[in-house]
Picture 1 (tube, rainbow, N blue to C red):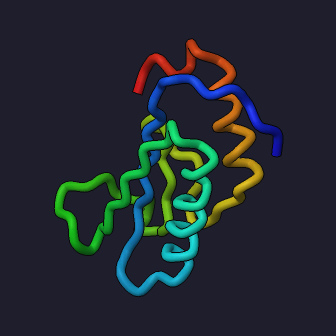
Picture 2: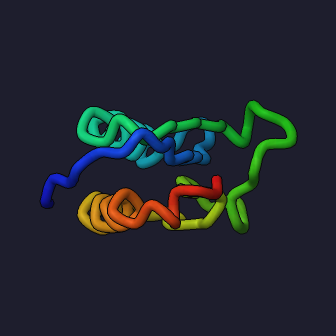
Length: 99
């Protein structure tokens, strides 16, 4: 995973989880660790069993990861793919303007 020059933009990442989901806990931990390398990430975790009116996962499948209001992962996660796509956003400032 290559390092890129950081910009002062924020990238909103929503992690949708549910109670008693061990995989959700692992993904939450992985995203927290990635936040050290990508300080522009603003990670918001929402538990669909506790927060009414939160963005829902599709078909109740968790975890769901939304980046800039687009669904990137549903029921799975790959940190290499995530980092590649985040690097793409960082390298292309026009993609960072919205969301």
